[in-house]
Length: 103
Image (cartoon, rainbow, N blue to C red):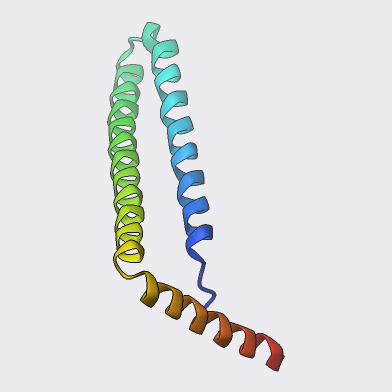
């Protein structure tokens, strides 16, 4: 199993948030465009799409909040323990260098 670095995770979260925002925007445009179709089937589809958009918006808000909170916690941890953080980063760097040279 390959682990991702913090930077890769942050990039993935940013991409997910951008994609989710695009889905929400496109869904809202679709709702506005389909407002004229008021048949029973069209109304049911519109209700399902509206519900799905609300879930997507809520998911986007929760992901954004969690990502921001995680970044703040990491920042506080590094600022509160700068020497420990540098030591851990140094040790991990040495370990990764040793593992890379073994191959």
